[in-house]
View 1: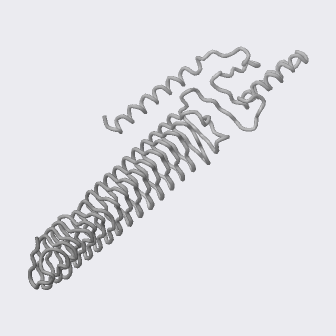
View 2 (view 1 turned 90 degrees about the vertical axis):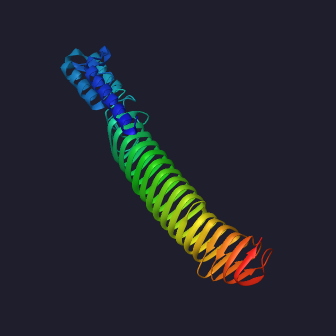
View 3 (view 1 turned 90 degrees about the horizontal axis):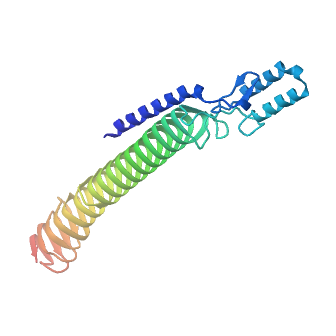
Length: 357
């Protein structure tokens, strides 16, 4: 089952459950002690201003019943003035177990308590925090433990998120879906990150931004600058940097370790399985290096092809260029105008061709 089909099924269940709760709400039993002067307060609702009006109304209709009645009305007002008893500092609303709407301007003043869940719509005019939000979450600062659906805000802060996060700043522990913002941060993402700055400890999918940074990348990094520890996939930018690449790096400057093809103006890698550029540098060069100048600081296994200059500490293959230099062991063939072998194998200097085994 796809993610979107699973999400649609969950939302339908939540909506049906909420409608049943709203239908059953008027049928709930009313406590006799909560009836004052003909006013009935549902046990699922505790609204201080409504309780205040009911208590005042009860006292006015029974004003002739003596001091006992007045005392009873005052006690009723005290007991029903809020969930804390006698505090009218802020309106309070306790919704049923499945609130379909949440409204908050801060952690102290919001319709649903911070340790509750919201199913449907939450609007945060300032700051709102809940355990879980299922549906649409809109606000300046949105804070949840888990969110499922669409979260739109200035700052979206969620531990686990499933869906789409458009915001100026998106901060999550785990993301399954999309983050769209100016700055996106997550420890783990499976999906899409689009921002000026993207940061992830582990990214599976696509990072698209001005600056992309990830510990591990399984997929694509497209941006002005790409940084990664291990890449299994594709990096495309002006500057690509990775410790280890199993795939393709394409950019103006590409330092790192490549186990794939690295076409660029300048390529630098600890290990490279194919480099194409103006300047190619690798510790261990496997398969080929093609450029204006090629250097293998440890060893070259395969081909070094340049119209100007090839250099390798040890060569196990072929050098083809105007000037070819091997500083260590020559185990192969040098073809060029000037060929030098300063270690074992071949002649120390030979024009046109030099062979060593």
